[in-house]
Image 1 (cartoon, rainbow, N blue to C red):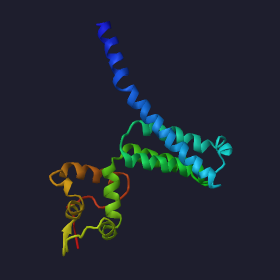
Image 2: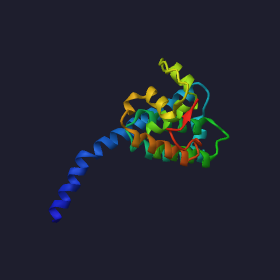
Image 3: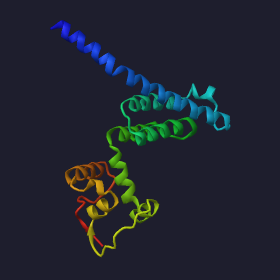
Image 4: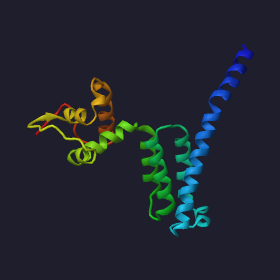
Length: 180
């Protein structure tokens, strides 16, 4: 039995540790590159940044989250949080942590759906899609026109919608609610 545990530990080290280290290294290099660009453009003093507790908190939390994901969109959101913490003087740590928690807890689909329903007309325009002419339709019709890959995945997108409602991002309880 102990040999098996040791073998599993070695296998874990062999399979998981190198990709995690690669993620961490890529993340840190990407952040360092962006911070250096900001310094070169006179938007940032790296020496002062060492003393910025908010920045240290954000970069620590964002790094932990970045290592846990391979999703490009999430990595971009985390990078932006770090860069904002580096350059904004009036950021509130609590609000920043709430944002980072949302990035951690939400899927990319949560953000895609939020962006769509923030301004559906603009979303369709930006994405070069033509929405159907609705006299009256459920929000799910608009969602499926925007993202046909969600067709047949109602349980999933309804779960995402409920998450967004629970967090206060909308007040429409049902995607099948008819709008005109």
